[in-house]
Image (cartoon, rainbow, N blue to C red; front, side, top):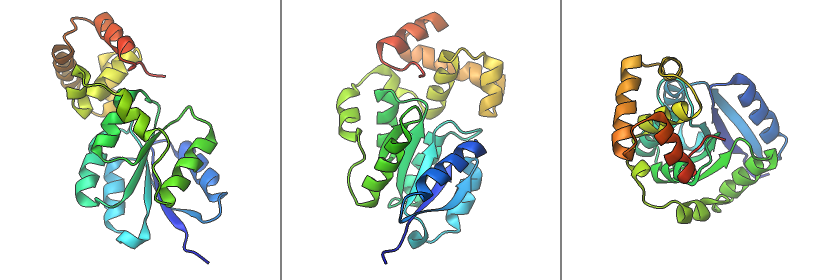
Length: 210
C-alpha cells in the first residue's frame, strides 16, 4: 500500500478548514495531518515536522496579521521543497502571478467547484503542474501593480471591497496610520489620486475582488 499524501491546512476560518479536511479525506490516499489558523501558529507547527511528514500546504492568502503571501515567501526560504497550493478569494491573473512568483505550485479560487481543489491536489501529488499555472503566467502583464508589496496589495483589496481604513486596519491587525501609509504608497505607485481612481485601475487590470 502506497504511503498517504500528507497535507496541512492554513486558513483563519475553522469552518473552512473542516470543509477542506472532509473533502480531501474522502479521497483515497489523502491525509490532513495539521490545521493552522494564522501564519505564526503555522510557522511553529511546520518547524516541528520533518520533511517526510508533510507533502503539501493548502494556504489562504487573507490571514489576520501576517499575510499569506508574506508567509509563502518566508516559507520558500525555510522549506523550499514543500509544495504549496494557494486557495484564495482573489483569483485575478495579477494575484495568481504574485503567488506563483512567491513559490506557490498553483492557485485555486475559493469560488471554484470543490472538485477543482481535489484535482489540483491530485496533480501536485503526482508531480504534475496544477491547472491554470501556465495560463496565469501568460495573462499577467508587467504593470505598476506588480511592484506593490504584499501588504500594499492587501490594503488595496480591502479598499476595493468597500472597507474603510478602520475596518482594514482591524482585519490586518495593524494601526489605522499604517493602513493610511500603505494607501498613500499604493496610490503613488499606481498613479491614482482617489479611491475611484483605484477602482478604475483595478477594473482595467482584472483586480476587483470576486
